[in-house]
Amino acid sequence: MLIYIDSANIEEISKYQSYGFIDGVTTNPSLIAKAGIKPKNLKNHLSKICEIVKGLVSIEVYATNYEPMLQEAIEYSMIAKNIVIKLPCTEGGLRACKTLSGKNIKTNITLVFSPLQAMMAAKMGATIVSPFIGRVEDALFDGIELITQCREIFDNYDFETKILSASFRSNKQIAQIARIGSDIATVSPELLDTFIKHPFTDIGLEKFLKDAKIH
Ligand code: G3P
Image (cartoon, rainbow, N blue to C red):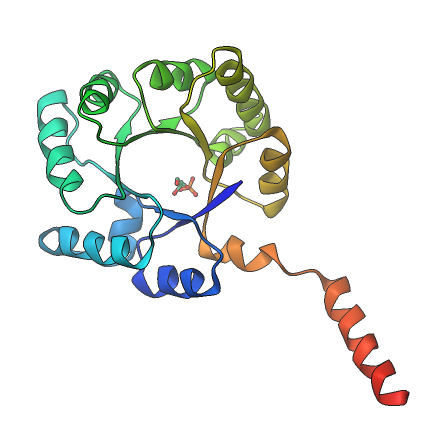
């Protein structure tokens, strides 16, 4: 399973890239704002991210109607070869997805909360579809089951669209979607930190080193 970092912060992205932990980047308007990026600096900022990470880098359009979405998408797509245009799962977003797919521009349909939304994104030729597990579970529905259903549907019809599970609340959820066969997980830096840690690893290592000193 590919691991993407869900961040627009250059320091965070550089850190995990240097560890060799990440295969790509996802951003969204909230993360861009959190990283303090001003609109006039956005393209330059994205260009830097695309140089740091060789994998796919998603940027979400701010426009909400078909024509302005397309215009914005085409501008972003010229930044680098690894740019992916994130579009919301709306009528305008799906129409823009189909048009951009026809131009060989990579797309990521985001804010997906149902298997039928995922299926429509795949039918429109999306490169990636992003179901939001955490927000589904915040509303007390089953986010893991959403990924199971997306996987089944995509396998039934040989859709090439990649399932990118997003919006995690725990690393247990990430292990669950990896078992189901999500193609990608996008993970916050905070959760990435918990991936390789286990208290028994620390305790075991401490004992090994203690024993080594004895003998
Ligand atoms: O990639 C989507 C993600 O950023 C949304 O996460 O925590 O705002 O639901 P969250």
